Image 1 (cartoon, rainbow, N blue to C red):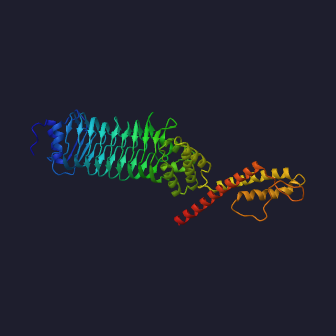
Image 2 (cartoon, one colour):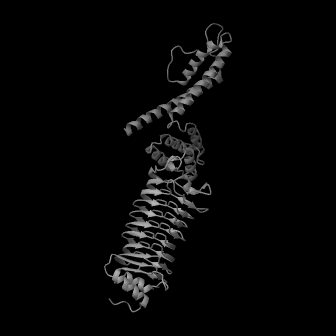
Image 3 (cartoon, rainbow, N blue to C red):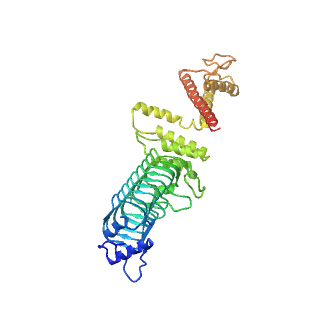
Length: 461
């Protein structure tokens, strides 16, 4: 096959190797690495190489910028350990696969809108600027151990399989908003600076920031994470995966949802599902700042995932924590603030009926002691032991205001005689009325909680 006249002797030798075997490897012995120019790079994608499924070049240097924008080629190209000094314009190309493992790119690599049938492998590569915005990858995007100096631009990327930015990968931020990832998205053991933005990303498999027993993500000072309105099938992380120098990084979970929590690990090697509820609530609070647009979706998502994993007590506490957050929100009309304050008094009763019963007993006991004190004032000739039962009966009547009791205890000014009564003035009447109201509310919460529990049991059965 005739080669282009512009080829140097070195380029011709490399071209012959590719045409013959589909592979060229510079072993680094006794001579400098071959330099392959712009014309050679373009020639590789022109169809002149033939129909081999894979072409591989190792340890070569490409000193010039090159563009094959919009070209199509039914081949798999591997550039292993190569150096690219100029910008590569690969926008809207269509081919089987790229493998850039261990290569160094000193200028931008533009893959906007590219369609790569089997994905891109760039493990341990070094990029100055990688742009894969709106590209479509039929396989993985693998950046394990890779270094990217400028923020990764992957807005609205579509990856049929997985995105791997893990195991020593170093990012100076990444825009992955609106990405669609068919299986997993992994950041474990990465080093991340700047802003990692996964807003509105859809991850069908696992969103992984860490695994028990492995090193945590290293966040640079000032690093940020956004998972606003993102969705994933499984969420895998530890609280330490979101800390920088012992403090939580700035992050937003507003609208974030997932199907399940990773259940691997144990109390000594904790994933999120094994974290104490108070620590989990502290992290959720830090990741969902108070505002008039506060979203409780992350709380509900975590509570549902904890319930699925059998962590019912933690799930209840997370829902109670959501109740406290909603009632403690600032701002809004004064009537709304009053309503949130009153609602805050009863936070948690719906998820933990025992709280309502405990407070009901406390109100009943306080009412009994107050009634006993009044009875002692109005019945000085009777022993205290004779006044206990009437006081308990009166408090019970007030604690169940909708129930009509037989022979109620008299509450009036006491006459001299044998009959025991409990004298009430306006203040005492007010206190007993408040007891009735408060007890009615507590009983209502208890009944609603028990009814909801029964409904949930029927639904689960």
